[in-house]
Amino acid sequence: MKKIILFILPFVLCGCPFAYDPPAKVIKVKNHTDSAIYVYHSFTDSIEINRKLTLFEVYYYNNSSHVVTPNYRIDAYNSRGIGTTGRESLVNESPDKKLRLFFIKEETLRKKTWEEICEKQLYAKKLTLTVTDFEKINWIVEYP
Image 1 (cartoon, rainbow, N blue to C red):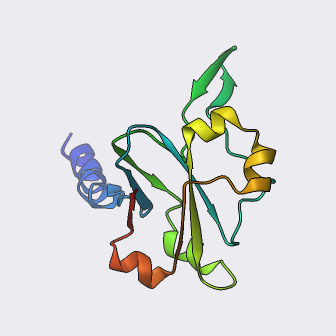
Image 2: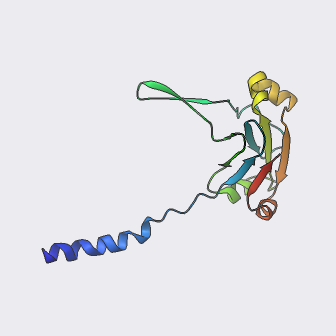
């Protein structure tokens, strides 16, 4: 019995410190308005038609459909992380090392087609930020 305990003990003691999962490093957006907003990010100065945002997403599993909130939707008076765990590398992927954030109101997505939004560039606010800009605000963007 002692041999079994001595064999298992190192695995138990050594396995615990390596179970740490650091928090994801994302760009956090705080919405201070009465309605949901949708955040579109881009390396160019315009919203492009090939990356469509939708009000909700539908996934099919377990023989049924499930409506979920997309990760680019931020509810009223709420905050959410956008981007990936490589937020700095995301910004640096841009040819000019700037990330553009477009804030689109939920009302706009409900009433207009994605084609109209892109054609007329229907967004409420646009920010263009570098890694240095993001670091100054601690990677937290406030809207409005």
